[in-house]
Image (cartoon, rainbow, N blue to C red):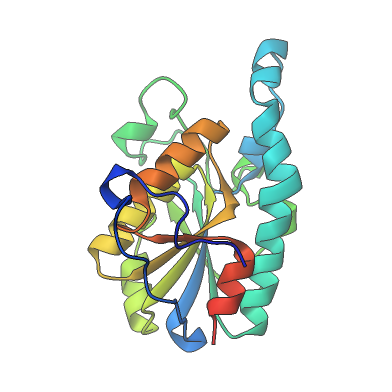
Amino acid sequence: MSDWKAAYRSFYYETAEAPDDIRLEPARTALLVIDIQNTYLEVADDAIEAERWAPFRERMNNTVIPNTAQLIADCRARGVEVIFARIACLTRDGRDRSLSQKKPGFNYLLLPKDRADSQLVPELTPAEDDIVVLKTTDSALTGTNLRLLLRNMEIRDVIVAGIFTDQCVSSTVRSLADESFGVILVEDCCAAATDELHRNELKSINMIYCHILQSEDVMESIT
């Protein structure tokens, strides 16, 4: 067990009391895996870009993907609902995308829903009865019917894994918190482009929008 109650504290929470122990009821808990898609594991043709992103790919391949696969298996074994969100537009030219995905730069994303690069990585292929929501927004709650699905299934707590910590993961965590879901972010199942961005965002959202645990801590919390 890690000392999650003291980790990733921002200035706002440096002196706050330790949070209570977390107890997750399987039937009222969902695991949400965000945007772990083929496109993000591709190696750029440009050698400089490929090298720049090498640490991210290493964390994904050696930590995030295997840990998330294990987390999914553990959650299924305990009766926790498993849900996937992925960035995918419904049209080939992406005219249905949100404005943020049409702007030039890193966040320009044209990922038609049936194209190979928009699919979830093979290690995290959904099971037949898993729910998969498609989104063209950062928040998986804002741009889909996920809110309705969670309410229909009487989910109270959401365990979050995926990428990028400082973008779609953070946006989703904040949206879920604003809707009064309990949110657990699994640190060793998430990544940002750099470790610095990852850690800075964890400190920004911890204790106000979510609690940040390691995957081993999450399993200890499911009763």
